[in-house]
Length: 135
Image (cartoon, rainbow, N blue to C red):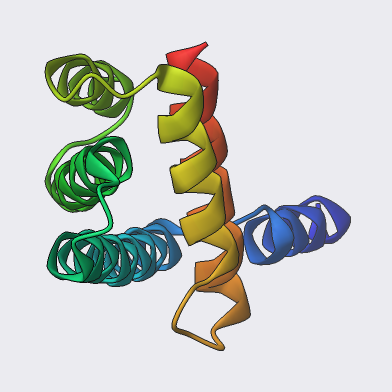
């Protein structure tokens, strides 16, 4: 009986991110997406003020900035499979391909503003779950 209890304790301890880790991971992923949105919006603004005629690049950067903001909101407010559907709808409304949305999401998961290893694992897991839901 004692071995069973020890095995259960061990599994609970090392069974993956817990609820608090998942919440911290979602927060870190949302923060990384917000940083990405800021960078993309700054890029769009710089291109527009440069008057170089890169209208397509300006529109693409602005759309991806908007998508990053939408994804940050979805990650922080929605749960589970609903996240993928909401992100897909946002990408469609902004005319951004789903592949680009997945790339942005994965890039954010690699640029987390935390050194919390459990939150990093949780954020990667959340990003993977969303990416799988997007196809």
